[in-house]
Length: 276
Image 1 (cartoon, rainbow, N blue to C red):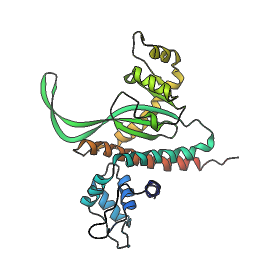
Image 2: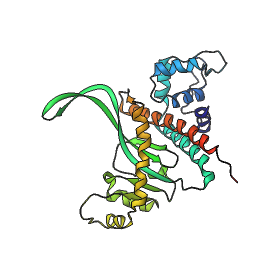
Image 3: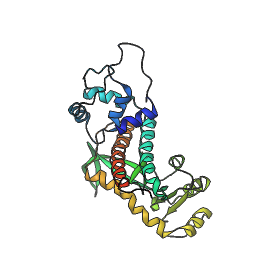
Image 4: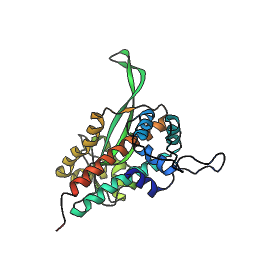
């Protein structure tokens, strides 16, 4: 139901075709079904939808999409629509916790990887070995709600993330993000970027001022950003997709599934308290 609410707020992810037969399934409900896919295969998703009798037909025909139909819908949904759905799920958790008056705009940027199914050759210790293919990604986590704000392909730059963050946010990151460009972009967007800098002299002006502003107390909260990665790894997430663009979309869907679970946990926790 939560995924369907978000899908209706965002609207149809793609334009419906007027050609051929009239659609059997409601495109909003199909999109909601994709949002809850998480780490399921399309076969498992199709089976689960049938087991819970989630009716997605336009005329209530008690039919359920097959795995290939679900995969076709996944291909049609653009990456930016999935990214907006992920952000909205993050915001719903933030809205639940907003009644406590805490600072919710504290984020952590970190990277991780999803293991694939395909084997590839790589030289390890001067010997060619077969290892599993993997997809590296970068996630932005809201520490207070334990939700994921954004998933991008792995990079040590924050320029793609800044537009997604509220002005005045605090962002912590590891030494990988100790780049002059990041400090410049954060300053322009009024973002408090806390990076544990690499050892050695800071020659450039922005790196020098960032080193002076570095707050160990704020940086310690970076550990809270590792919780979603731990949850994903415990669930043994894998990347089953072959196309690069599908790998990123798959990672976003895993994050959406995490945010849905986090929302209900946050809501249950908030409902224990009554505002006096």
